[in-house]
Image (cartoon, rainbow, N blue to C red):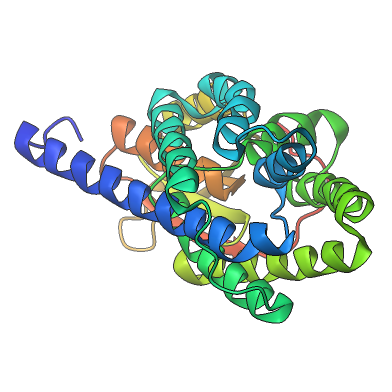
Length: 282
């Protein structure tokens, strides 16, 4: 990455910022055009903000920023400055876009709002995630607390969203809560499609002549458990040390960055993990 000319780096950064802004506007359009007018909520921080805004009459965009802020600060130690900057940028654009789209109702039909709201929201969030940003601070929180509580990231997020949707049921009615859950399910599936089938967890194998240096960096900078597997090159007959680990989709971009810094020629194999059990040992 350090060998890339400055002009190309700037062009890549501008491109990423444009995609993050585009994703934020699409997601905001889904909230204001489909979900909010029908009292259908999203999960995570956005869902919490929507309920809080309804009860307090405080501007939704402002609440999204304020509630996300502690989680974004938490990401400094977990995800690094680059991810924090891109996430904060996406959240700010999303908050501004909410005000731009405020009052622009697309439909008041519950079913249409649920289905198309989920599709549009999933598209926007997927674009943001694909460009190494996030709108939902609860995913960042889950990376930290899931290890301490012995839960997977997916289990933690699911548990938190169940609490949020129960709150939505008490505030908006249980029928609205069920529509909200359906919207979340649709959005989540669309995110997977936008990110080309990326799941919450990935199984990663790394082959490099600097395996121990990479492994130590992954442990220290991502706080993940790794396993060394010893093998031999089929052609060269040289002994190789393979790094094996399971990481979340939010950790993927940072992991690739760390590996490229240490060994740009490292071989990386990434496989979808549909289920994993047990603790992430170091």
